[in-house]
Picture 1 (cartoon, rainbow, N blue to C red):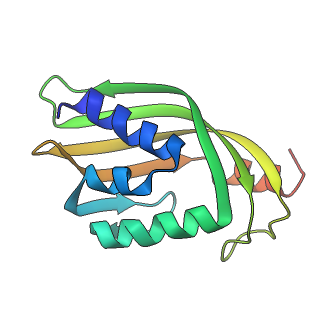
Picture 2 (picture 1 turned 30 degrees about the vertical axis):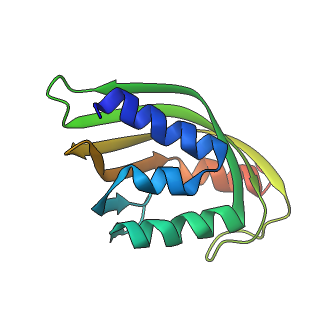
Picture 3 (picture 1 turned 180 degrees about the vertical axis):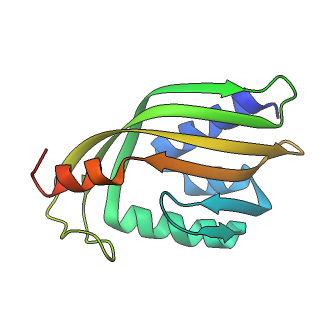
Length: 135
């Protein structure tokens, strides 16, 4: 699969809540760079990440724009996250069902028609301000 349809399928699966479809688009040894965090390796680690995200957050992405290099090896996406903070995530403010809207982006490496790296970025300070009621 080429980058634009691959990344589009990834985000469509995200918005449907179809985690198995998302995972199927990843290489077995996918590298996942968490926003302002560490790198996790492997589809199983990504599955655990998605489970935590689903427990703590309910999110939909809009205004998704996907870009790719001409060689098909790299892609990027820009989007807006519309979310609800459902359960307190470790090290973050207490969850009370707060809603937030936050721009974000991601970078991808593509290998053999699969996503080999996902690096996510968003403004954590903005998110904290919104869920703390300071935005």
